[in-house]
Image (tube, rainbow, N blue to C red; front, top):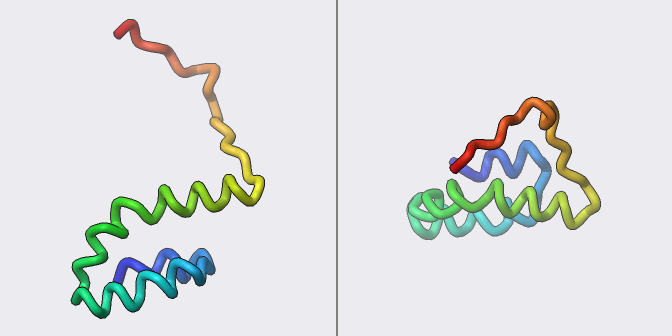
Length: 65
């Protein structure tokens, strides 16, 4: 049941979307949510005002490609 991370994060809007779709499609909707849920959740957090902070970015070496 892929909607479990949404329950842990208390993202009730996504649970309300995922649960019925997973039941109706006999779990096939999980394949789509598997690839899209984290991206949608990060966008939701950014819209709420959270910021992305990269730790140790001074040690990242850019490749010459």
